[in-house]
Image (tube, rainbow, N blue to C red; front, side, top):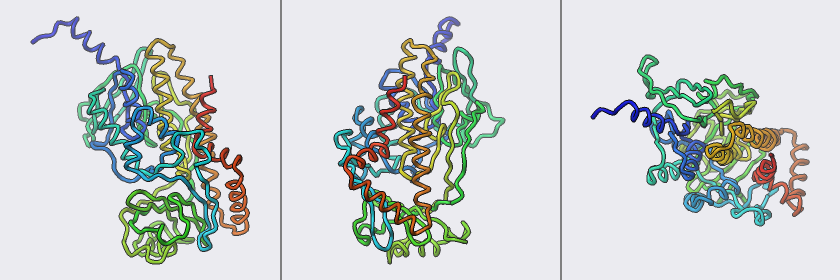
Length: 415
């Protein structure tokens, strides 16, 4: 059947009346879900042919659970994770610690705990809902080559993952683009947006194991940042395993630190017998702190790691990205229904200062504290933290900030 020209133009116009999301991580999928809930058509493109399941972020903060709860998503996530009402900073060997109890902010959140749960569980939950409800279009396995725009809309050029640059591209058009495609964002690179900052000198080695550290270290929480002689490590518990962040010993190369015998030795320092069950995953990574100048250029806006990356100490990166998605979609919804395009500048005004002050700066301080090597200074900091945890008013203020509630409240006041 032939379609007359006028009808074809109408069909093409309708297809272009959408928002294109690049990236199928927790940020991109959250944005897609929220657009779908508002009845705004979207196309989600991601280079991954299937959802990533490797262990990345694993901490959900109270306000993130509050946001998700508004859409009936929190309970399903909580069922798959581990409630963590306390977190601590401790001295290895003596077990001395400063412990912070999130019960202090029970009047400020419906979820006064951290949830230890893999971010992939949220991604699967969101994708299942989107596919079940049939909202929007999802195209996995497409790598984005270029993003361009004019006064009226955006154009995204993409090719199948693994194809050559000579392969015929697919071209997608829409009214806006959300770049949620991570630290190596193709969207950000297409627009030549600066992503300045620094790379920390140390390499972190992520190791996962079934060893029950909670049965061997007295008073251990589910989230622990630990000073040891001459170094540091962290222990984060998930429902079926422990996630250990280790570091090369002084003078040890990265290659040597990744050897099984080196990892076994480091685990044995934490708890005798900790290496006997072997390791599930070993992954080295470098830590960066970077931030774009503006979160949007014209009709293209960045969110999550595409806009900001930080030290994982404190678990704020993924949470901050999800908060970006909620703010950005709320703003786009207003524009979609008649508000001026310039309202997108409010997204930068609300989210960038929070990322700079509350996420990057806090994460940087957390990292610096745990990298401290002077024993006297460590004891001084521990005493300060213990005094802070013991003071109800100061502890609440500290927990509002480290749980990201204070930053969200400040952002909401920005005009």
